[in-house]
Length: 353
Ligand code: OSB
Ligand code: MG
Image 1 (cartoon, rainbow, N blue to C red):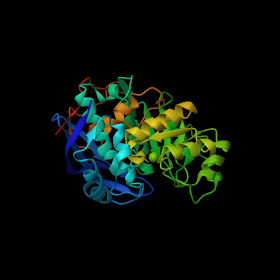
Image 2 (cartoon, rainbow, N blue to C red; image 1 turned 120 degrees about the vertical axis):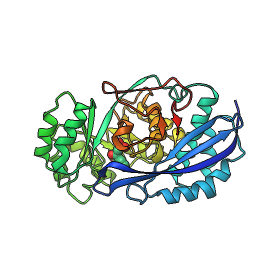
Image 3 (cartoon, rainbow, N blue to C red; image 1 turned 180 degrees about the vertical axis):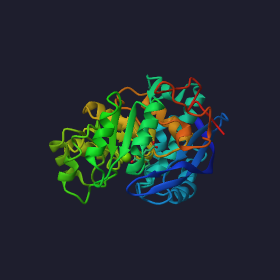
Image 4 (spheres, rainbow, N blue to C red; image 1 turned 135 degrees about the vertical axis):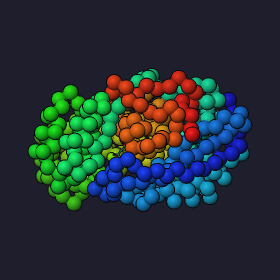
């Protein structure tokens, strides 16, 4: 099946978050993303969402750099091209260095377009098998609000709660929170904040009872992650460090982590992510799907990703209503009995409004 890419259209979406999202690096109170719509010669429209932030606090890309690269570089490369399979987009984009978030936004739209053309849900098109995805939420609040937010999340049925931590967090306090909910899984995400500290401080978090600690050190501090993996019983998981298949290989070679967070935006889209999954499976590396405080288009792609065999930890999957007054998809994403059910409709399975 061949598709001619007839048009690519960008739309900016901007909305305040219901509650500010605090990380050590940035407080996010408002979110701007670019929704990418790719039209094929069949008139089907595939959607992607560019989830770079306004400033380069998470990685180097920004929503402005992505808009520039999309409009001036990537859209001209793809427009009027005939594509036999969405994997070809990654090849076509190889003439452009880096800029993986910008690439991912278009590439993912083309995968949606192909799934729609085949009249198949995206999750089935990519080989997914699981139709209900465990829901997980992130608590990114001041210490004074952690207990309250965890209680709310537990009440809403979330099975996994991720707490943002940093060297000034209090392990003994966190332990009381974790031990109050023996039926739930708790992850910790440090966003690289232990980078200026010694391993000793991180070790004090080993008794909290977290399933894993995500990105304790800087994205290129492989050696510190290797030491952490050796010296802690809590599993070490990498997020910001993993930008390519090569980075995963590096983590494996250096024994610098047990688990990775899959983010298609950071990796450059579906094609690279599917390669990463194969490599992780071959090396028994754990995997889960991470969030970017995104809207429903990105979330729908992520849900399809989480449906794949081998994704063995619950991801950042909260309901649309967790961050947004109104999401950009219909129906909105909802959590029922701790799970999100995937649609049988073609492509991402949601209408973009
Ligand atoms: O480090 O996982 C992260 C959000 C924005 C940028 C980085 C991260 C996050 C999250 C996920 O923690 C939040 C979510 O979308 O559920
Ligand atoms: Mg993270």
